Length: 153
Image 1 (cartoon, one colour):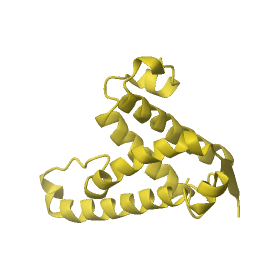
Image 2 (cartoon, one colour):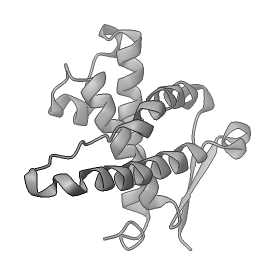
Image 3 (cartoon, helix red, strand yellow):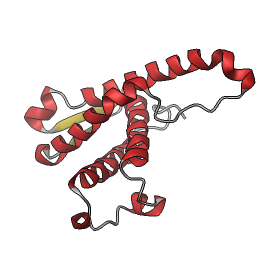
């Protein structure tokens, strides 16, 4: 089984986990990417939303579970074929919500390049931006280091 272990700095990552946990309650009740429906799909809307929310909740739960006792004692998270796809999807969901709620003043290029003067950002915006970058980096690590068949390609 392919596996990657990532050593992280607890003092740097802990505040970012707080950002994710703050969004967790909202993600439990609302899709990160709401469904657009037309009249033909209206009958299935509730079922689709329920299934998508259940999947999103499971993905976020698995992401947060990476930051377990091992992480808090050794600073290490482990990603393998059992959790990789869930983690990638959870990172995407959290990043979508961060962008929509806390980073809407930043354009796509700025968000993706990471070239921001952090000193000019308010503390909540800075934490949200750093969390956005952290999750993007985590997604990139998974995609680069785990076989594409693991993440459903």
